[in-house]
Length: 150
Image 1 (tube, rainbow, N blue to C red):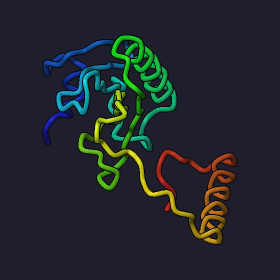
Image 2: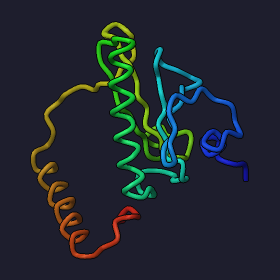
Image 3: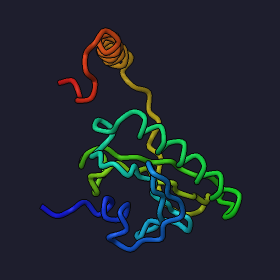
């Protein structure tokens, strides 16, 4: 099995343009940028995705992404910024080490990040809401939510 490329960046085994690092988090330029200033923020400690990351590491990633986004906004002046994080192949995750994209956007960049807003089936929305409310209530009473519930 090959070593995780983001773990290799975090340990300086793989070259990258690191813009911030501390004992818990590393932020570096994406080598396949969608726009100037496209930065990835990762936890140093390997976690495959949102379901596997320690809550404190996740908090550090999000706080660092917020800080990076503020610097990107002030220095590069994009029209907006997306914070993007994918979990699993179906969501477009290609490197299986949790990472958050800080993605500067311009109004005319041509990159779709929206979908058609069509009214949903109210009965189905209510049914799914009930399922999720139940799972959240169970998680408050001791169910380990580190793994997705089937």
